Image 1 (tube, helix red, strand yellow):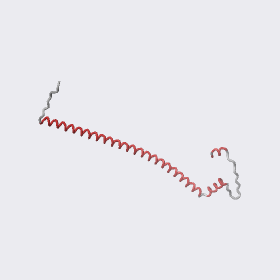
Image 2: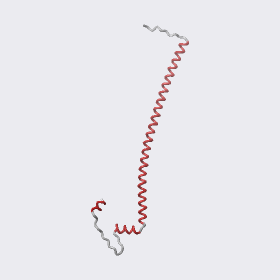
Image 3: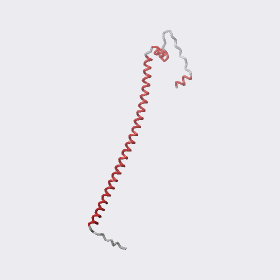
Length: 127
């Protein structure tokens, strides 16, 4: 069987063929636009997700740094309070006398100081 269909060449068929060709071109343009928009949406989604992840990591690092700094601040404040207390004690004459007698074996006139050997328990505590 041979193809014996002959196309009519009149204004209607020519218009419908050109309309069909125009629609084909428009479909191609629509597909390209749709593809371009999809790629753009994918790229933007990827960028926003990566920015969000980076922000989260940076935020976690900053929180760790703040926590470490707060610990250092707390230790410094405790040390400061201890030093304030020591300054207050050093202004007390009785405390200075006690340190002088205990650590440096100083005595008032007429006093005798005896140095006793340390026990094993005290030596273990020092170690």
